[in-house]
Structure formats: C-alpha cells, structure tokens
Amino acid sequence: MKQLSNAAAEQLVIGSVIKTPGAIDVVAEKLGPGDFHEPKAGIIYAAVARLALSGKSGGAALVEELRSSNELETVGGDKAVTYLEGKAASDLGAVKEAAAIVRDLANKREKAARAYRVAASLASGADAGAELDALMQDHADPEGWTDLGGVVSAILQGTHRRLEPTLLQRHDGAHLFYEKKLNWIQGPPEGMKSFSCKYACVQLMQRGETVVYVDFEESDGTSCAERIVTIAMGLGHDIDTIRSWVEGRIDEHGNRDASTRLFFYRAATTGLDTAARAQIVRLVRSRLVKLVVLDGVAAGMSSHTPALEEDKARDVNLWLAGFAWPLVSLGAGVVCVDHVVKNAQASPGSFASRSARGSGAKLAAVSGAAIACHVKEPGSAWTVGRVELEVVKDRPGRIKVVSKDGRRYAGTLVSTPRTATGSIEVTHLEIKSPEEVAEEAAAKRWDLICAELMSKLLEQAGEPMTKTDVKEALNERRRAKGATGWRNDTVVAAFNFLVERGWATLERDTANHRSHLLGLVKPYLAEYGDQHVDANPF
Figure 1 (cartoon, rainbow, N blue to C red):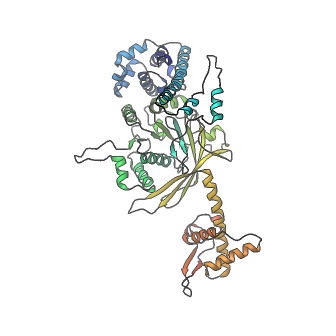
Figure 2 (spheres, one colour; figure 1 turned 90 degrees about the vertical axis):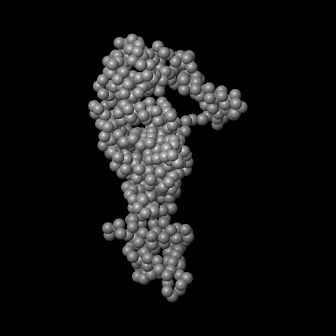
Figure 3 (cartoon, rainbow, N blue to C red; figure 1 turned 180 degrees about the vertical axis):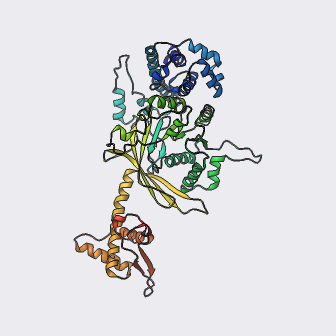
C-alpha cells in the first residue's frame, strides 16, 4: 500500500526523535510503534521511547539499545540509524506535522486492509455484504467533511458491524475486553483484579490460545500458579490438563513440544528490561498471542531504571510506547492491572472516579476498555466473594452494561470456594451479568425473608416442628394478611438455607419415619444475609 504511506514523513519523525531534543515528548501522545508503515520504524520508535525513559538519547545510545534487544540487524544496522539521523528536523512544529501525517495514513491503511479482506471474500464467493457495508464509515474529503450515508444505510439495513469485545467472557457469553487494543483494569486491594485477568487467561487456554502474563509484583510465580490451578480446577479441568498448559507435553525423548499455552514472566526484581521485552515480542509474534497481561503498572514503572513516576504523563506515555504498544501492534489484547485513585469520594462520572491512580494519561491511552473493580464482599478460600465491575471507559462502545447510581456496570465477579481434592484449593469463578445479579437478588430476598419467618415461628413454638407444619403455618399467616401462599421453591430454599448455615437442625421424626423435624439453633434475621451462624456476633 505505497499510496497509503509516506516514507519521508516517517523518516522525519524517526530521525527527529533520535536526534532532536524534546521530539519524542511531542509525538508520544499521538503515535505508537504500530502507526508506522515500515516495521523497522516502529521497532526504532519503541527503542527510542525506552531510551527516553532512561534519560538517554542519540544515535550511539540507540544502536546499543537495539543491539541489546537483538533488533539492530533487523532495522539495518548502525548505518540505518545514522541515515535516519540525517532526516531529522530541528523544528518541533515540523515534527508535529509529520506525526499527524503518519497517524492519518495509519488510520487509512487499517481501512484499506479491511477492504482487501472483503474483496478476497467476494472473490471466493463468500457473502461479504455486511463487511462491505461496515467499510462505509469514512468518506472524508481533504477538508474533513464526511458523507455518512453509507454508514446510516448499513445501520438501517442491519448490516453494520462494529468491533466487539472478545476477552474475559461473562456468564451470558458477552465479553469485557478487546483484542488488538490496550485495556485497563483497576481497583483496591482484594478487588480481584489479578484474579480477573487470570480468569481471562484460563478461558483462552481452554480454547487452545496462548497467553503471556508479566507480573511486576510477584517474585517467584507461586501466586500465579496457585490461582491458575484454583481457577482451572473450578472450571472442571484436571491436573494433567493444567500441567500441559504451563509445561507443554514431553515426548518419549524428553523434548518439550509447542503446546505450552501460558508463559509467565516475573518482573518484580528486574522490571521489564530490554532483553525480556524482546523475548515477549518474539513470543507474541510467533505464537499469535491473544492476551498479554501487565500486572502492576505502578510497580512496573517504579522498577524501571531510573524509576518512573506514574503521575507524569510523559513517563506513562513513553512506558506504554516502549513496552505495551508494540504488543498491541502485533495483534495482542493488552490488559494493564493498576491501583485506583486515593479519592474514594469522587462523584460518579468524574474523571477522578474513572481514572486509575496517577496521570490521566493512563485512561486517555486506553483504546479498548477500562474496568474498575468495586468490592462488595471480599472473597477467600472459605467464603464467597463478590466484586462489581464498572466500565469507566469503552472506546469502541460495545460492552453490554446497565446504568446504576450514575455508573455503568458490566457485571459481578463471583468467587465460590469448592471442596478440593487433597490439599488443592478450588474456586469457581464466573462473571454474572447485571440482569442475572438482579434476578438472583430478588429471589434471594424472598428466600431470606421466608427463612426469618420460619425462625420466628420455631422460636414462638418453643419446640421442633415438622416441615409440613412449618409450611402450612407460614402460608396460613400469609393468607391472613390477604396475600397468596409462599411458593414451594422459596420455602424449600429457606429450609435448606437455615440448615446449611447452621441456624436450624433437621432430624428424622422418630414418631413418624416419613417426616422430619426442624429445630431452632439460633434466631435468624434476614438482615444477617448469607452469614453462617458461627460468623454472627449476636
């Protein structure tokens, strides 16, 4: 697509960021490595960004950076760097103009690539009408005026297709993150941010996909391994299957094949250095990795040498340009795990309530989705946990949400401990849609109300009662108030709740072997919620 590239503009930008002081800061917010038509230019741009983070600049330093990352020969050697330095512009205004040209052409190339795919589909006899209509989204003339007729027609005909999220699947089949985009997840301690990302990893591994997990906070990988096991077993996978995902299969000669699906890199002590970044880039390219998780943005920036400050837009933009955007440009969906701002009282919808801690450049950089985690019930190996997932940014606008208290909620992450085999802990994870949560809450409310009335009935009786007598007494009292009787499934759920949570006992009636007696252990109130009797302080 030579007509959709401008070698002079790209060389001017690259030459300038190598040679001209301040040039990288001017273009970092607008350009990523994947915006260059020439792949070598993207590689050099990312290397310059990494150098800038270390306070270094110039052709000589760049050559050594590329040599360290095994990319020097790929870009054409030190002669290529010298040649590009000769294309630099000293006027930052000219650099801005060239960067705008590069970005505009990158957008057009993306559209052209889609057009080629549609043409190939048509040539093969496939029905590509919907894809063809979807291309009718940009008919801008040089002055910026745009004909939206094609888009409107496609929408009205039902053939317009938008980019859809495909990562981190919800219980109803919807997803919360996007491939080939930069995504973000943020929350307080126990917000299950990392759990959510590992859940997404397991979901992809189930489909035979490869994932990369970079952890800036864990020193040995133990926590990652434990969580992958507990999540995968909670979804029904056996130990041999899980082991094959992380080790690969070994043949009779002791050689490991290419079946490994999870690659974990611990960056807690060294940060993500040049050599490690180069390995990850090669891995993403060779294995067509769908998801890369960068867990611990603050730790990742602070572990850099010199340490970077997350409240400085420059540091954030350059860190992303050097480490995250190259992975996005290779086709991976990147998810950054981060902490929330300290201002917990920020009003819904305000920037402070939506942004991760530090510079607003983080939220501004998101090209996919940003999710904020709100802890409703902290989970553990023994208790159910619930975390509400709020969509604070959705660039493509395709995540299914509901509005609640001025916020957009995409669902609730529920962690449920399950009985383990031996010493292995198992947790079942699922993300329930807001509609599912609302339905369960409504059903649960009547369940607990019924359980409270049963408790009062037994307390008043002063002795155990048969299940039949309890049910009849409840319905009689309800009808006396002009209401219909209790639904049978609600009564059964209330019986089971009181017994399973220790508020009541259920024993066989010795006088009538076909009946059981329900006896009160401790009075229960619906406001206690799901608490076990031993956890109630009263």
